[in-house]
Length: 298
Image (cartoon, rainbow, N blue to C red; front, side):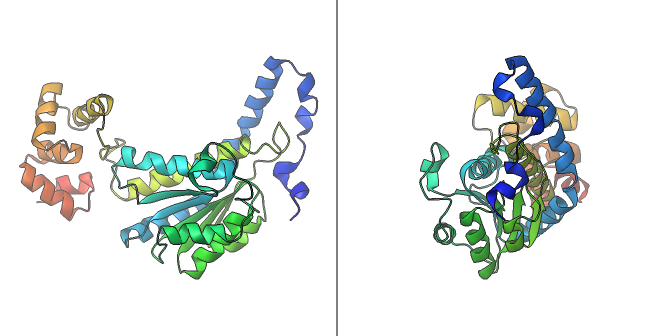
């Protein structure tokens, strides 16, 4: 489909006089347009669910979740991938963000990178793509050559594939096993898909990574119990999670946090199941990291 035919490239009739509007009216217009994004995302929840379930399955089999994109879409994928290790305590190799043009492209455009039909295969080869992986191509337009070629290559290697676009009948949808098409419509600034389209993509990426990690046992109740306490703020948060999950006081939580070798999950199981650190660790291993299941084991 030609670029000028895409809904994300159409002119927004509500903002055709954008340059003549007051700052207040510009902000109000942006806010009104942004309100439509969650509803557009709501429409594709079934497809997101399908992708999350597939990704959990692939990761449990030894695979990874790989985001592939260019420009804003690529940066959003890299951002979501980068947040997973500190939030969920996973290795940085489990969720990978690849952007056309590499690290340089995070800060400025790399000429020709998103138009390359060979670069994506090289980038995927560089991380040893396997048939256990899930490759999620992200492109607001749904037609980025780098992403299309990457999805085709991933499929040829037997990897599971999915796509996230902001147009219907997107070209990348034809290349993906699980296509997700969020209909965000025209931007207030014509063609500036870092706006509504970017917001929609960020919301969907939030949903995917968070749901996948919950499905892998990285959460107890609504607490991120696998958080890596790499600074004082996170260490305080870790101890506070023990308090919230068990009802003990701060002093007791701190003591168990120390006994558990600074492992929030282990400390919670020790307290609620009234077991030793060794028994708590055993239970968690048997329960595949799910705290709720570990507490109930005997």
